[in-house]
Length: 277
Length: 151
Figure: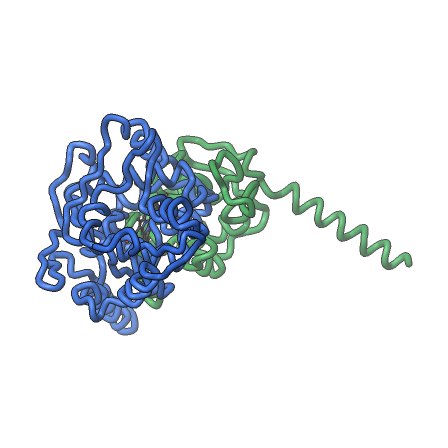
């Protein structure tokens, strides 16, 4: 090895140590301890431990989520509060006309998505259901600024509570379908979600440190696009990266995938709104 | 006029000959995962191959493979094996086979097939019927890989 290579090698090692996640870090927000690692469950035997995406991030990114004052997502949560109180639609009502106490949403995020009338019901459905049926207002687009602001606000009420998504009974057929989507190879790069997030979590893929692709922190603020991102928008992004035609946001495939992924995170805590790069 | 006609004729002839010298993805024959014949008549260019190896929109091999010959580049992946000395471990035709379609060598691998244009599911429209790398690019990367020797 010549001197130049030696120098380069040491800069890379340095860069790598900066880039390395503080994988053993503990998460505590506003005095609330949030478990970021739980043991494997019977339906996820292929992994060693169920881990929050937070454990894979660099310590600077981790720190942003430790303090709500530093967490950029809270700018949007504040907008969510305004939207929640804003009268909209033909009935002359706001969300808070019916939901005067945000506390009543405690635990909701932890059990979503769920089955209602034989279909998968997501947080976005609940918001749009109130808007169109009770307020006489227009529905919001799946990943719109308004939608993610309000789903973040509602999700925050469950922060720290263990995810407990139902996967048996009437959820079983949707769970199986979501599992099929998770393991299907798609796109010109011919990869499945499992190739990266089950077989390779913990490994670097170029500059990215692969996580388990958990959804317990959504909607999530990304430094990359400086806004809140919905679960389905993230699915779409990963599919495009492997040169696959994404499914539709709010469509049956992504709903099933959301249910399946949520169940893989059962036992982890709600981290909404999380911070990622 | 005659000059133009002649030039036109020559262009057609060269185009035709270069076409026939490129092996199409559907014509490739694998032998235990290896591809014996070159995909093109032209020799591979290792300098260009090195660029394709690191280019995020082309081979992007560095996304998954650490390669000490390229420490001028930051962010080497950890998904696949370190490629240092890879030419000591594999024969030329085996490496070609891996580049064309690594699944013929490593069953169920995450490594993409770089010279395959069909059999994909939900491929993005703009990549339908296309290979990730051209035949010449595969030969270029191959000739670069052959330079990765340790002994």
